[in-house]
Image 1 (cartoon, helix red, strand yellow):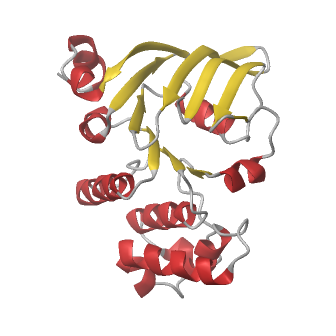
Image 2 (cartoon, rainbow, N blue to C red):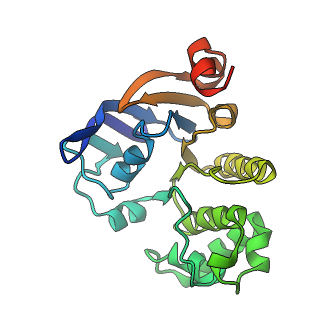
Amino acid sequence: MAMLEVKDLQVYYGVIQALKGISFEVNQGEVIALIGANGAGKTTTLQTLTGILSPKSGSIVFEGKDLIRTPAHKIVEMGMAHVPEGRRVFADMSVYENLLMGAYTRKNKAEIEDSLKSVYKRFPRLEERKGQRAGTLSGGEQQMLAMGRALMSKPRIILMDEPSMGLSPIFVNEIFNIIKEVSDSGTTVLLVEQNAKKALSIADRAYVLETGSITLEGKASELLNNESVQKAYLGE
């Protein structure tokens, strides 16, 4: 059984249908890329999976449990973390305080401290700036903070929404290296990304979303060489 199974998911904004019955699955340990143009429904998909939006119909099953009508904070407790588009760090709080917010569903202080050490090891810059206000960090550092905050919930699957948005090429490479490290350490990853070439280079499988519908799916390596994908998303 898939770790995450989505079937016939339909989501509306008023009378506008944003997701038109999409179905996909994510298996334990995979990196799955969801690629597509602006307005395709990628962010809507992640927000629906994490309980921010409610679907009109369809099913979302995570590790055998139905997530429909499950409150967002309960979904975090179940092991699903979300790194939102635009980072959404708490600008007036310190780096340290932001990271602790990621662990708000956890009770064991010793385990939280272990997670904090692990995040600092993965993101040394965050430890260097732990007392600094998050809003004064660079875009790349804020992205690291958003990822570190999500990891503080000790997720089994992490959903990342446009992690490379607005970053310099050097930071983009660094962020994607970290995503690969997160995957290699055993955390499953569902990656929404406009930089299709980067996403497909680290993914196991991928789905192409166009105007609310999945139009292509397959191994990431195959989609990387697919002529229609190259023309539409890879600039080739």
